[in-house]
Length: 398
Image (cartoon, rainbow, N blue to C red; front, side, top):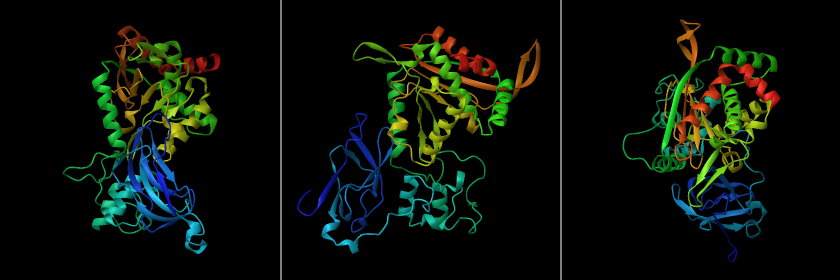
């Protein structure tokens, strides 16, 4: 505190993070704020963090701009405490969260730049979420008539994260996209990848998913069964659940199976972590995946949700893909991806028939994992998914 003002600096948010990027300010100079009201959204290497005001009072000055990289301890905002203003100057209540439009921080920032009121438009994303394309349509007057919820300027069909409202020319590398670029550059430059791919008959898998959903009365997504199978396979092949510490010259084999699940959001790809996936029941696993996925897509995932992964699962089949070569997230040793299930020729009892077929592709760190281990792990996962009774037996018997 300096004189009658409080200097709020970028705090140490843990996990050894030293810097973050200002994504969007929620306040401006001259605004009055309540204690614990969100001042700014900051993107770290792990998560989007909402930083609250330490005091009630007035915003005197913003010391950093959107898009700026700030270090821990760097000045963010100067505040004048409420005691110097009088109680009448302060708002009586924090803004209502319930009535807040659904939009990612990057989309909110775009709305400010385009002069669009988020509460005046209806989003075309999942659950009415406002996308960047909706902002552009509203700004240019090309949106649909009020109440339709559909923008005529947007092609109908799948909405791919990062594809809405992208204009030609140079764009700043910010937010989740910047973090993704840095992580993937590190992955490709540091890790020699070895990859195995195949496909399996998903007839029994789809039947098991349907029957589980009907019996439990709640949806069991394929992702739940993917994570369950991977967790069991990691138990049998613990080196796949490890990592390399090159500086120490050590192999680290993790005790817990903490599986990251890649989730496409409006702002880019997030990977929330299902902790202790190998010790959870299927209903518990399903509930946790629902919670993590919802938090990621709503921009509410915190550091605890995004840290400590030991292996990653990605389901690019949800967007229609078949085969891919997923890149490992350092310092993990492996990642497995699943493609779209579609009818394809499959040999059953010596005859070629049409069966729903699930493609999968597993990449591993070749410094740690050899081909025989990668093949054994991939085949174990495939065997559990092709024969869900075996998966359920392993879950019950341990």
